[in-house]
Length: 153
Image (cartoon, rainbow, N blue to C red; front, side, top):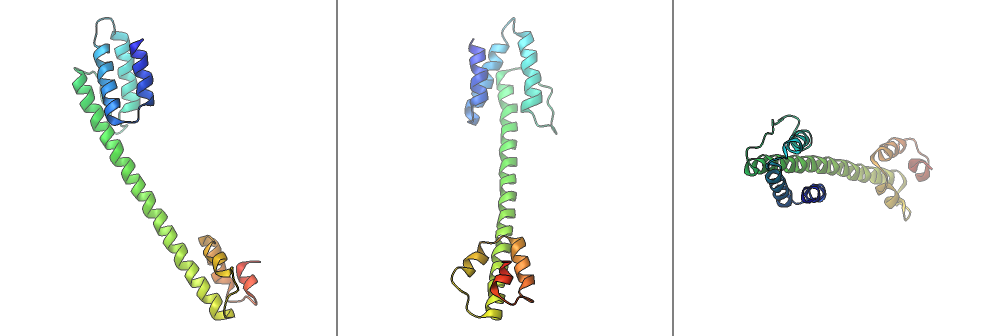
């Protein structure tokens, strides 16, 4: 019963320290006599789920400390990878937002140069448009006879 509780707790854990502690206790319990079959099943699960595909382990733990150290290294690698992915996504979103901001400034200027002062709400409409729409507006401003034609209306 206690091992089953630990497995459920492991599944719900989000804290690195909790996970490491639970795994260490499970390894201790699985090291007891009569647990060879469960130990093999747990080892297979750890190899499939908890180890990185590019660094497969042959997990036959000699001690709970060894299991904890291996798992700690894997979790640290996952944390680094998640951070790097988040940074990449953030940079991409920042670039996209910068392009959109620059395009909206250009479109506002082009429309103002062509038609004079803009009615209320037009600048907001332009700034609220996505990059593809802004590119279309910039293209349309050259031949448009009215602000509505630039905006696509």
